[in-house]
View 1 (tube, rainbow, N blue to C red):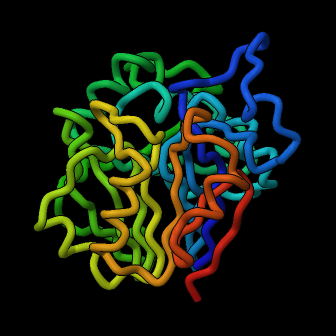
View 2 (cartoon, helix red, strand yellow):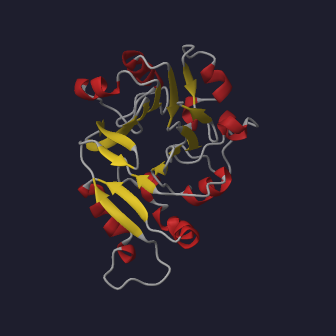
Length: 254
């Protein structure tokens, strides 16, 4: 399985054109972060987790030629706003895209993209097949997907485990039951927003603590605000098996 980080950033702290902070001025490409999303290529399927506002550019930048499914962690705009941009894949691949989401997330998608779900379907609109998921494992092709219950402040959201790879973003609280489902992961991806306390996201220290409890071979931090600091500065102080992810980073769980 091949995993590519399409985006490792967050809407929180997005630099504006007048910003003079060190991260905004950094020449290091690892400090240039689009909204968080990840591409997973298995032996038989191409899957994206979350399609935020940067989805179109992310797919072009990564040279993605196929798309079978999108998994949604939750309904916030920085995770769903790019759904409309699956149209080129419908057109070029001549197929519908499978969408996997909880009932609550589906309700949000129907509010935000009502035209996609309208009874009279306008030609050229996104073509999707929607699948309801909860906390029970399901399959996409030959891969078993294990949903993980996460709390994003008071909002229940999902992470996902596929084989020895686990992806969690926007977490603030993770139960012991979910922790046990994550243990044994070879690769762990988890959010680390900033140093200071935040109401709905792990801080850097909280993310480090969680990763050490999991005991993964390698952990990558994502959903990074520029308030965290420069990639080169932050990463040098992390434990040796923990790294900051960056846009375009590719790993293999083979």
